[in-house]
Each structure stands twice: as structure tokens, then as C-alpha cells.
Length: 129
Image (cartoon, rainbow, N blue to C red; front, side, top):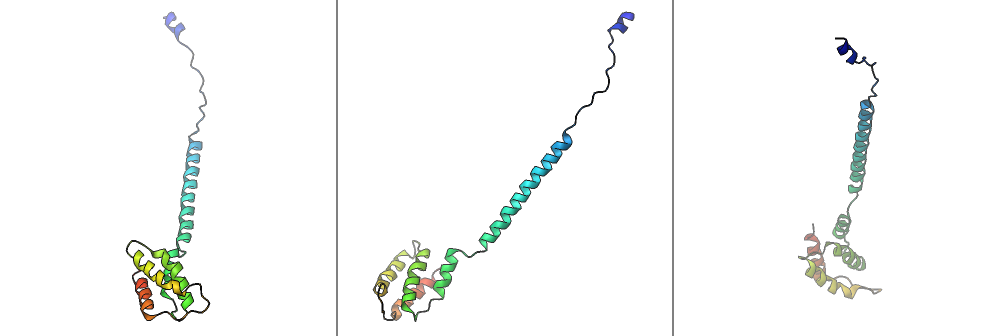
């Protein structure tokens, strides 16, 4: 029996185990907070950018408010802003109107637009959306 007792080893004292779980939790909370703040920042700055009118909207407003008494303004505004809306459906119509408007460009004094041409321009503008 003494032999068995000799083989027993002493009980060792309590060892302090460093617990890092609090620091891991704190780091996780900070990371999640930073990600949430970043997402909110991106969302709110994107909302501000989208509230500005698009180029198409601005061009459409200018086309709808054309003053047909000022021929030069109509010709140049239509050429610039109408080009924004060209697609497969209205490309030929736009090009036809542009050819007719060439006679009004690059001249000091121009006569008033013909009623037929005004109607074509108005029809083109009505077809836009």
C-alpha cells in the first residue's frame, strides 16, 4: 500500500487561466458597429446623389419648355437635348429633323421655323419618356 501512495503525486495549486473572451466580444461589437455605420453612411450619401435630377430629366424639361418664337434657341437646344433620347425607334426621326434644322444653324439672322417642322419637333418631344 505504501507503494501505491508513493506513486500518487501532489495536487498542484490552482492555475490562473487568462480569459480573452471579453476582448473578443468587444472587438466583434466594434467591427459590427463600424460596418453598420459605413453602410448607413453609404446609404444616406447615395440618397443625396439620387435626388439630383438626371441628365435625361433636365434635357426633357428643356425640350418641353421650348419657346418656338426664338428659332436659334429651339434649333440648338433640340440638337443638344434631343440627342440624349436617341434610340432605335426614334433615331431616323431625329436625324430627319436634324437635316431640316441645318438650314437654321450657323447663321446670324434666321427666319421663323415652319409650322410643319414645329409639329415634327413637338411630335418627337411627345414621344419621349
